Amino acid sequence: MDLTGAQKQVDDWIKSHGVRYFSELTNMAQLTEEVGEVARIISRQYGEQSHKKSDKNKDLGEELADVIFVAICLANQTGINLSEAFEKKLNIKKIRDHQRHHNNPKLKS
Image (cartoon, rainbow, N blue to C red; front, side, top):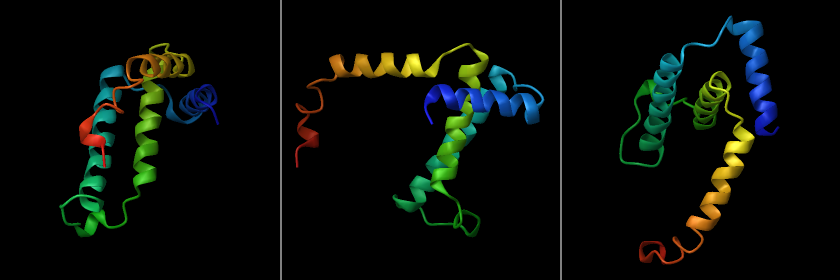
């Protein structure tokens, strides 16, 4: 599925099951919450934090999908075409960061 298809699927779901989009402010809070859940999993699986019983069955992929879903909601309700925006961002990164990471001594192994 591409980003345009994902945006349409989310919009269709909202219209048929979600009643309406939450406000942009509510969705921003939701996005922050979902990113926090991703951070919690990462800090416990890859960092030094220990797991709590309630964290053991958390699925990183599912939480990342939640982040994508809410980001798509925000794009849909603010009229952003994510395919175009993402392509534009990749082009900027190709030019701006072409040698940046190659020249970073912190990344040399």
